[in-house]
Length: 227
Image (cartoon, rainbow, N blue to C red; front, side, top):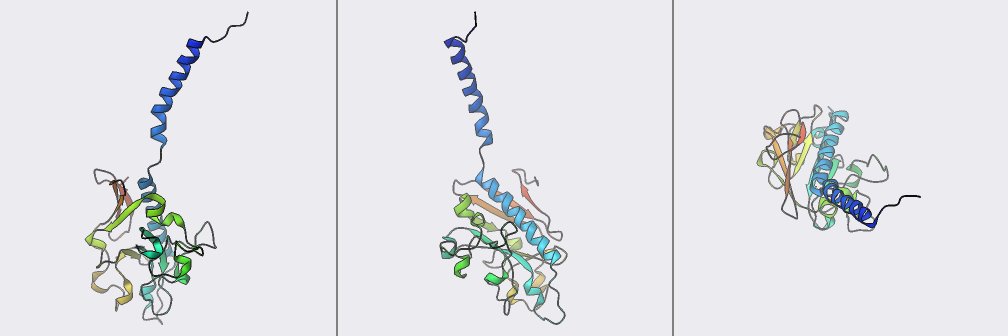
């Protein structure tokens, strides 16, 4: 005679599975702010890598230093009024500091796309609200991750400019380079740690640190230690 589970045993198994699921599922949920920080961190490092691999020094060009690779954050109509960022090298024309389509880094995973989540004042290809947008929606932090604000500490902010460039040795440089008269004008090399604070719409925040001199970047935990 074959044995079968009783109704009580089946109910008990279902209850146990439910308890285990309730305990495990919350720990597998994604944290959008953490995901955003990991992405930005990787792209800061990528910008530094581009700068070190693509040294812009040119003895015949007085403005060579303005063309360094940089990551710039913006918020405007073309970003759907969300926080977004773009990786570019200011090579077009007289290096105005503004992003031109030809200057934007190519998306490594899709060579027909650009590494921009939208840029305020840019052409339609970098306007995320336009059907012709050719950037990466993931780089639009507000739309993709719910990030409300991105704030640079005074150590790496010049006026309202939120951008970091890197020189050929990977050293971080603050501010818009387009108005500089020389490569390292006004000590624009970052002299102390730069903290980039990202705040989510739910009020949570996270900090990315870019160290002076080396440009080493990391995410800080609650104790202010790199993780």
